[in-house]
Image 1 (tube, rainbow, N blue to C red):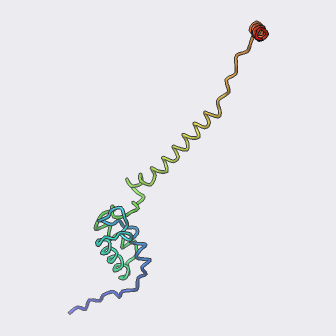
Image 2 (cartoon, rainbow, N blue to C red):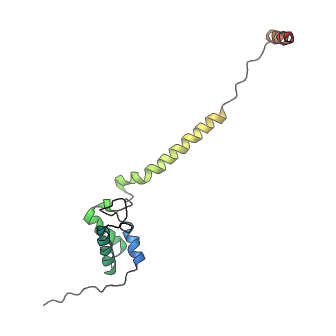
Image 3 (cartoon, rainbow, N blue to C red):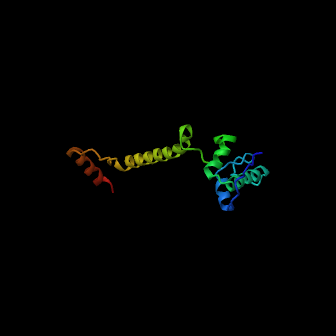
Length: 136
């Protein structure tokens, strides 16, 4: 007869459970984290997180457990690799393009030389003087 030893549970801080659960997406609410969702499924997932942390798993191992079960979709923050890198880089690129566009427009608006009137020849100058003298 084999004796199966179970790893002793260690106390788990609820803040630690909250930190791990806040990185996971609730499968019912989908726009809330497991930590913030009021659904029964989120309660069950928080219990799994608590149980796994109590058994000695690291937060990364707990997240990996859920990723293996639900896929990378379960993570609220997508990993910074592969196709999901676009999610992280697109806002940065958009801001940089916007700033460059604003800088270009400001430079064009402020860098334009003011239009100077063409030089007035002597005959035109004399005609303008006569016109001004005629006016009462």
